[in-house]
Length: 315
Ligand code: NDP
Image 1: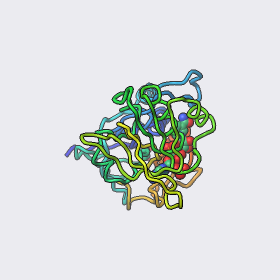
Image 2: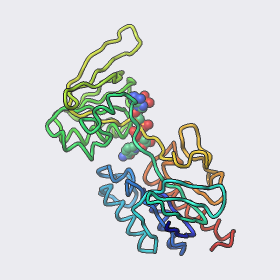
Image 3: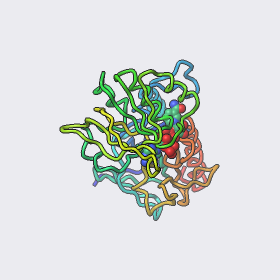
Image 4: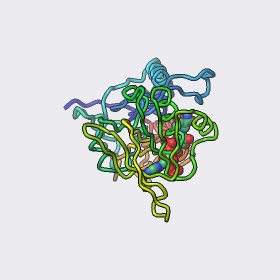
């Protein structure tokens, strides 16, 4: 079995992982970045990013991630296109194992594994997975050109997905369980002024139907109230945009997390309850979950790891 030693292992490759890589490589730590099975993280599934400082005209998500990766590599970070599948944080150096069974022995670890889209938990989501159900409009919207689709959720992601789909599709329904949108005012305004978006407030999805793929959604309005009403909408695409779950399952039992699986850090420090293990980005952030805040914590984690390695004479 192949074995590699490193001063610093960075697990994950979104804005947090790459920024940690930039800082750590400039500090001559020669970090290994395991980029995982979605290199570049969630932002590679988004279109234009308008709120990352330094891009007055906006930037495409995948392009920004490639730039960040190149910037980390320029200073000596090594990016490995594999996934870390097991970790043992019970003693130092830490022993981690990748999906090829290779061991990585690390003096310090920064976890930047991000978060993944949530599903409603309906059986039909599994049944029609890839047959009309998707959690990424940017990836799959193209298949629904000139068709009718639905987006579930009322946050910024749902609005962003609905706006994107409205440029491709004939009609976009937004299925919102409350009687208001949670999204920012600017997003709400854009959605409300788009003619082919219809918002279905106080509606819950109870199922999907269709022969060989999604043909429609069973909905209930005003669930549990006197005026409860069941109805269907005919759509061919059903897009989930109801938030995210941190990708931290492999660290369960190894490190302290909250009940949702977000890694607990000793804020403002990025250290965890395991000395030498740090966490940055969405996997440790249930509140802000922004590219720029993820990049910020990635920077802090690299500085924290550098200080830790100096204090332990490993650098
Ligand atoms: P949010 O948690 O903000 O919103 C999730 C939405 O999904 C809410 O409307 C919520 O409803 C709804 N929802 C959750 N669970 C269910 C369910 N089981 N059934 C039906 N509806 C459900 O998540 P987002 O992914 O939208 O955003 C996460 C963060 O990222 C936010 O801070 C957001 O501002 C930010 N963001 C910013 C963007 C930008 O600035 N360009 C783009 C995208 C995200 P309810 O309100 O009832 O809880």
